[in-house]
Image (cartoon, rainbow, N blue to C red; front, side, top):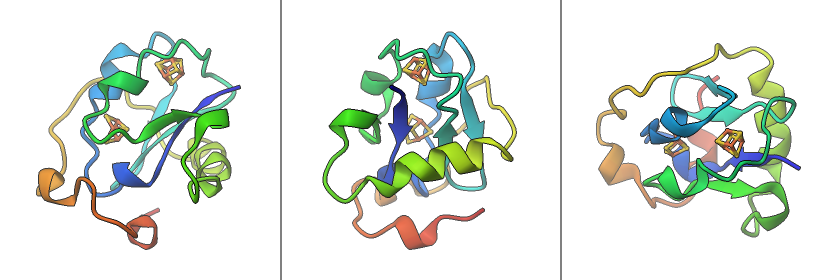
Length: 107
Ligand code: SF4
Ligand code: F3S
């Protein structure tokens, strides 16, 4: 199993998740983070840390978020690793919880 970053991270990118991951499996794109499923050890630590509630176990994904399993695996291969917390994106609080952000994902 793995944990998966889902839609509500887009345009927020709070990065609190990065701070607790013991195996540094987060990778960073312009406005989204992903988890490398080959590195994740299912420790569960990141899930409660996300202010956007964007992280789920792959077998507990909310309806409509299934596409993010494949997206995390795909983008983790090319995006660089991120291991330190940084400032959230501008307007992260305004974007937190907005629907239909998937089309705003930048690669
Ligand atoms: Fe990292 Fe643990 Fe979260 Fe997996 S579940 S991404 S190992 S903090
Ligand atoms: Fe994204 Fe939440 Fe981490 S918004 S960057 S998954 S803390």
